[in-house]
Image (cartoon, rainbow, N blue to C red; front, side, top):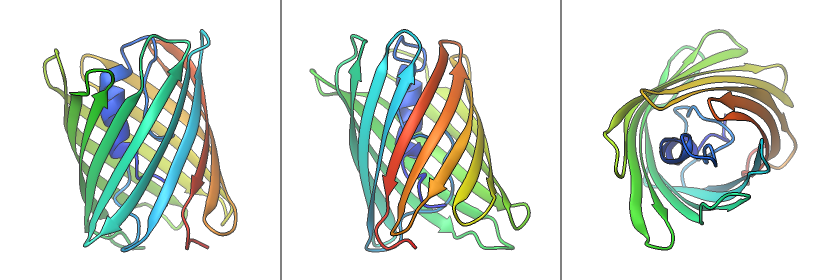
Length: 223
């Protein structure tokens, strides 16, 4: 599934922000998969996350892969909250590509910077596994560590399940845990169109309340 590239940096922002009034930032999906953007190609993920209390997060992140390493760099802006703009960057490498009978494995590193001081706010390292359970069900598991400025490092864990109903519709469900700070769940649908265009509608909940995410993704070259 192509549109999970931001989860590496998304977990970074989750670690930095889930305990704040803005809740979290990052990809539409909290849990990453083991795939990367195909070699020599790029994609763009963007989303609007709306939380209770009028908080809004608007994010866009492009990602490209060169020499087997995927690079992502994006920014987030917020409305209804004192949080300023954020910059997030990530690196990801697939160690073993998933196929019908073989689990996929990957490693990702991410960092987050916040204006106006441009200091590194958080960083993370995550090991990722994607396991094909059946022809239509895939399980994604994340295990890693996050360090937020001013707080002790914490382990992070995530489980994601996706169901490919057909070539157009995918159902998504996720559980994300940052020990001692964050406990979040979300679920939703992805609609895939032609020419690598897809959109997400995802509802989630954590200790700070509920949110709804509307995502628009573009991966040129995908059918």
